[in-house]
Image 1 (cartoon, rainbow, N blue to C red):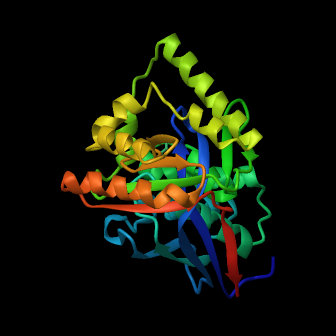
Image 2 (cartoon, rainbow, N blue to C red; image 1 turned 30 degrees about the horizontal axis):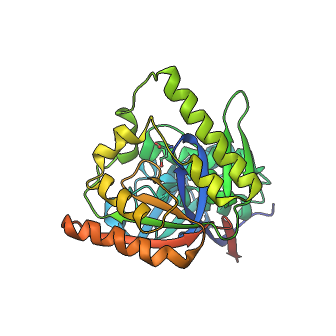
Length: 324
Ligand code: HSE
């Protein structure tokens, strides 16, 4: 890598959903509903050696996102890469164009983290392999979830469906989604706590009865088989979670009504998207998408809650847009 005076790299990373019901912390799916765009600017430092990261955010929910690098998902990624690769002779400006609403279960923090890791890798020609790159991106999840989890970042980075195998070695198993798999994500615009994911994890049971574990494993395996076979009905048959959903649904107003409405309007399966409060309905084509989204919207309207819906397919993952 030649000495850099000034370079900027623009990257994007899509929204994602995690868990798909029984695959808590294991399943990620990239969604082409929305994407965050990151412009990383690298400037050769004039004097001191103190690392300097400036984060600027515009767009969706920007006021609720901390710009202190220690508390920002992109900032945490940047700090770690700068330290590991001795890049503190540069100043960094990270401009984030937020399109994915932060804190609602659509992988917003993950997308900014992924796009930032990708931009560093590109600008400095670091040649970081995918697993290591996602390990850097997962640093960003510490800012919102308090722990590293890889489901959203892997879905956002690779696109399509990803299984996270975490132990003993971190590994990502990617399976292409059936092209006609369609989703409707519904985002209720309720107030969410600052560290929402952390809060939604704290309420989960630490131990689970064997019977529930068996039921969730059998559903999770059905989902995996469905993706392998490109069989949407099979995928949807597995999207049923008897461990997390009963606990977390209490954080989502109108959850059962929205679920019943979506399934009644033709959705084949329904789940909490990630840690919520968004929900996600699965369909075998976009044809019934607007029918399902209308019902979800009407249900929230009756509850006097504003919401946004997105009809989407699987995404193709994160990408470098430009380097100059
Ligand atoms: N697997 C994580 C959780 C996803 O459910 O807490 C957070 O988006």
